[in-house]
Amino acid sequence: MVTYAATLDVPRHIVVHLSRLLAVHRRRLNTPRGSRVLGTFRQAVMVLRWFRERGCVHCLARDAGVSQATGYRYLHEAIDVLAAQAPDLHEVLNRCREEGMSHVILDGMLIESDRLTGTRDNGNDLWFSQKHKSFGGNVQFLAAPDGTPLWVSDAEPGSTPDITAARLHVLPALYKAAADGLPTLADKGYIGAGIGVHVPVRRPKGKSEQALDADTRTTNTLIRDLRALGERTAAELKERWRTLKRVTLSPSRIGDIARAALALNCHWK
Image (cartoon, rainbow, N blue to C red):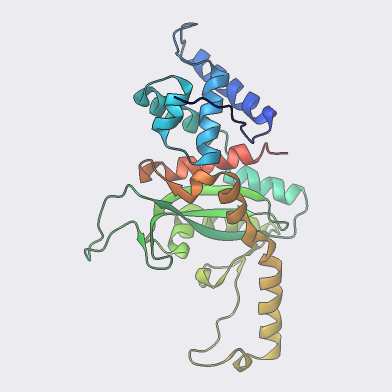
């Protein structure tokens, strides 16, 4: 048996923040003092290792000195606590207007998963994305003009198109925001989203970009350029919280995990 020391590459104030949230949660449950195997700080370290390293829960539980079942229970508890801290959509849009943002950026990302279930009416797998050729959940997100992640939605099965997922989770709120002076920029996957959601004009099938008039091409270029920084939002979340690259828990937890990662990201300095 070989032992070694390791360093968790997360700012200490994030570990302390999560530890305090867990302590509040335990007090709310009237958990007797000393009845848990791990204190809140060590539980926070185990959970943050899972978010950062995408490690197996069995190994993390072993390192923490708890059983695998207890490790899963502690992990799910922390995910719920963090997801409850994620920003609310309407609060985010109100804050964007108050801060004078020119627009927000809407996009979707596939969070892959290896534990899937369910089929569509046509017999195809409900969680398989033809666009990405992979299994997972479709999560919608909003980003600030500088690419800062602002909000993430609950997850829909990977077979759900972006425009459908957006109609379920975010478009009604974006219509009101647009009426109040905060438009949304999106890619061609959101064509037909409605008023206030600006997308590039699709060129005629079989035609080159030059088939569009000069004004339309200019508009398309402006939208693509303004959206460029927002494109890095999904990459930032997945690279910083690597568990989002492939979730090994139930796919029903993908939305909660994404919101938990966003809540952690809001405290990263």
